[in-house]
Length: 121
Image (cartoon, rainbow, N blue to C red; front, side, top):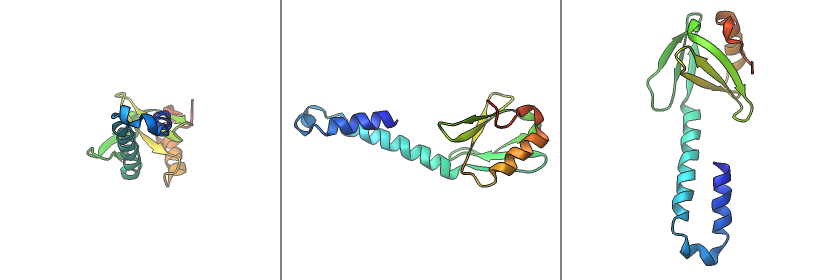
């Protein structure tokens, strides 16, 4: 997404050719909308847990409940600065490094789902 934005900005710098490129504002609007979507999803994502289950919500999705035994993996993605929690049914959810309670969540993953290996590859 960042590379596309840089491309658009370098094209916009060539003002003499802007009239020949009517698609440029649409590309910029598309990248802006995608960026807003990602930011809004990060703001509205909620994760709650107790000793029996994990409940996670995404922006436009209903809350989903998963038992600790359904957690198959926890992998860290340094580029996104988040942990990806994979479930047994090949779905999952992300939890950001900036999330309050991240250390407690990872400790509970080790306690209740030891096969998931939090923080692993």
